[in-house]
Image 1 (cartoon, chains in turn orange, yellow):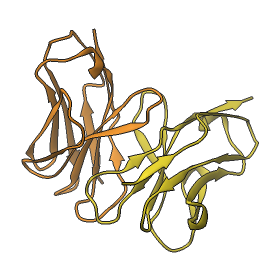
Image 2 (image 1 turned 90 degrees about the horizontal axis):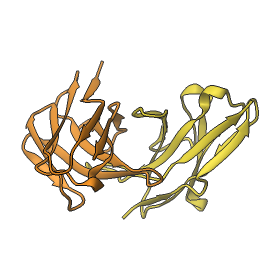
Image 3 (image 1 turned 90 degrees about the vertical axis):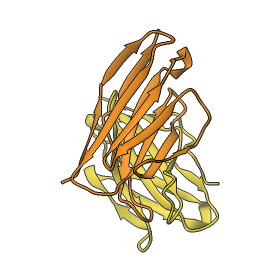
Image 4 (image 1 turned 30 degrees about the horizontal axis):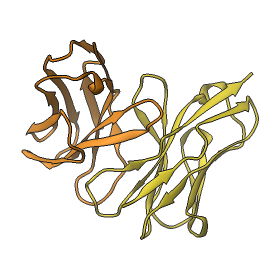
Length: 113
Length: 114
């Protein structure tokens, strides 16, 4: 069966520090991968998605970037965190090709101080 | 572009009572619709989905939802709620054939009274 791992679960980082959140999927090949951010009362905002290795689509301009170095690995990064980057970050995957339901990781609570 | 509206930010229901959470979507073609549930500090779990066919779909944990094209709605229902149903519920819509993710509503926080 397929599983998705996301880490760390919680992270407290100072303003101006770098960020790296990692997400890996097991049990499937060629998934579509997604990074969402969830802010209180604002639902989920799609940040990035990827349909293949090295292919990244950005939905909103921001202080973050994403990379997909391997088929089942998706990384969210920042060179210098801002206070406004605080939030709950969720990685998700879907079966590649067409629309299918998304499966989510357990999320990372990022607090920038 | 598609959009989702969940009109109720908070809903309080007594344990054992029935539940209906509202969801309205905006999309030009036949939408793919989803309901997810999120417990505090956790990821999202899929409750049910509608792609085509029977407009009344059954999901996990005793939930069901009905797709009404004329009303652009996909309301979630449960005949009798349990204290463990307290959570955040998200409705989402997706465009067929697209890889660009789902569009989520802002969520409804469900509170269960004993």
